[in-house]
Length: 497
Image 1 (cartoon, helix red, strand yellow):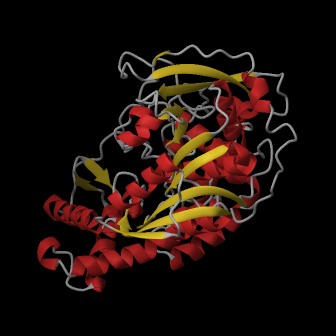
Image 2 (cartoon, rainbow, N blue to C red):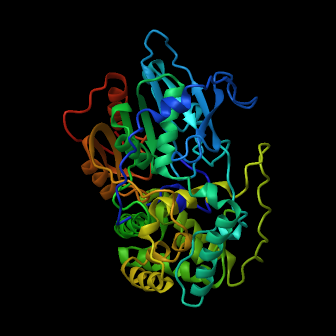
């Protein structure tokens, strides 16, 4: 549900073995009303390139909720009204994930599949989280190369990786440190509650994807009496949010890769990658080694071995992964020993008409991830070296990517500790069995933390995000949103159903 390939590991969902629970302030249920008291939102068309029905406004929120009379920032909010005034029951806030994912267009995004009966009952509400997109966007002045997080451990490059991580943290601190420390999940949850109050609603319903499931869970922890019907699609493990989530991705990638080699071996006649799982595995790693010596030109992209391994999530979808690897193999054979010359990197994308910094997604993602979970990241670079060496041996596909040093090692703490999720608010969790970005174990952990929840597992389901891919799961979500009734117990849906 997010776009940047350079920071896909972050934006698809990021995540800590240690959490400190911070109690909600005594004014938690009145702060939003106070912030909303003098706001009269003016709705207008979001842009000439957007549907006329999608209306936008701006909501003011405190940068620091501990200083409600101090500096304010803008939160851009969109609304697609319920199609039936008679059937309307409230608002459904949407979040695409991240952290760092903009959500202003989600109410009209064709990737978000909602049946008409849901659209009849809810105003669909999108918003760009604080610091992102049109919501007082931040930047760190990062170059294109500095936004690249795909850095597997190599002894010869480790000092450079440490310097990269330190540079990103220092640039962000120098460019926008006093703002970035307030870009936290808890503050975004507070912003959601201000949006609720500005809209004049007693409660909100919610549909969040990937990291958005963690954001939704934090809202239920902070504002349990304001949470109505919450659907969490592809849930993060709230107990591993931070560095632990990167490592969970690497752990789950190994059985998925093993499963893929067996599936592909049975189809050697189609893909030509090997007649046994061992042969398929060897073919893949030979391609990685070949691409490390000289990039493989395939589909207009020059792929190094690092770039091939960075596509680890592809192995959740067996057929697509087999076709991709077969294509790489054919391209390598046709290319011969001397490939085409390396292409120069393209220019950075221009800033938008609203001057959103080109590194806005990366800056926002690091700010939230590091600010939320600073205590989960070791300060000693040598700890990352040791972890990366060990995890590369345990999880060859991507263990060293997950455990290598990152900017959070040098980040200053956020404005407050993170959140322990542990409540009885009702929610519905949707999860694919073979999701390598938010693994199944993480969804189950979220289910345990939200003790009033039910979980729908798509058995055999492949890839990240359930919405729109399985009619059984979609029906369960629609039934909950429209009737308020959760399934009597946890459900298993079959892939393809």
